[in-house]
Picture 1 (cartoon, rainbow, N blue to C red):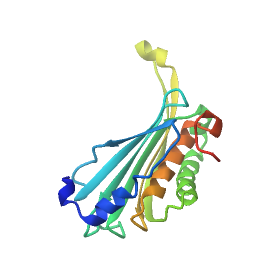
Picture 2: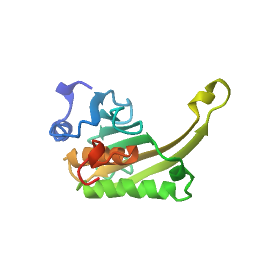
Picture 3: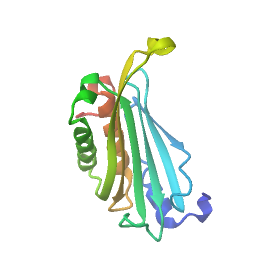
Length: 182
């Protein structure tokens, strides 16, 4: 995307993300957005600094199509992918997917991120390594993939919600570098 050719509404929405301030335990970088999903897109990657918590990362993709797309209910669509290592007992719980999905809704609500047309999945994975990979041991992971349409072009609350959910999945607390009130 060439910034000079991007519509003002898209640029203003991206500008709303500029004041994003997160704890030092969470790194944020602009990354290349997926191509061919929408005429205009941008993406950011959130990652947990290794010294603070379990490995975890998240992506937030901003999609903009002035003509909208079926199911979007507006010109903007946000796509989030949050992934992290979690305790084994979480992924073996039969309700883990429903619980993770409720965490997403809670994070959006708590951040004041108005949204509609939400869709997605919550996936839990438990893996055990064998042979030459046995030194890895077992690993439990939780992943939330979701998309929704923001009700305004102010995207800052949505970025905060993704960061809060990432911190929660990574096990960050106020004392380990997470958000106050986590």
